[in-house]
Image 1 (tube, chains in turn purple, orange):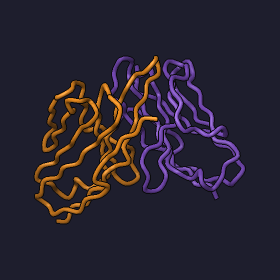
Image 2: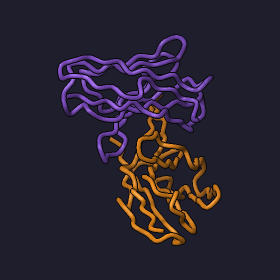
Image 3: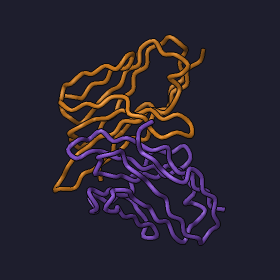
Length: 112
Length: 113
């Protein structure tokens, strides 16, 4: 158990809908990263937050947004969903000044 | 943007064989990390490397941080069936206050008993 909790584990939704994925980082970790992993693909970096502020942005679509709350949990919002958005979405966290990132179990999103 | 070239893409080996995979980049990284991902699970951190030239072991796993800070390799000795999975390298860097953790595309390892 990495200590990073992601909910829900599975999500099935229709095209055009909006979903919110939630991540609770390890206790004390200030950094949260979001990644997308499509079938048999590598991990595509989406966005990173550090202590509530956006720290880095990757290949995140405009339909996607994220935020980190004062209690350090983070949410990834995906809107106007398309079939191609079906993927595993992972959250990882790391402590301040510590670059070892620990991953959650992921949320498997299926858009039908 | 920064990219990591990880090779080989896949490996099919017999139980007991040694395995070697590597990652290279055109950019310098401050830290190299190696992860293993099993089907339906999140990546699990195996080894973290913090200094150029550093050689670190974790059981049958050995990884090195290249002297140029642009590459790293991971060796697995005496492979066993439970080594099956996808191995990812990741490079961490901080540039202009922006922190990034960049992943390679992974090496898929299959071990035949």
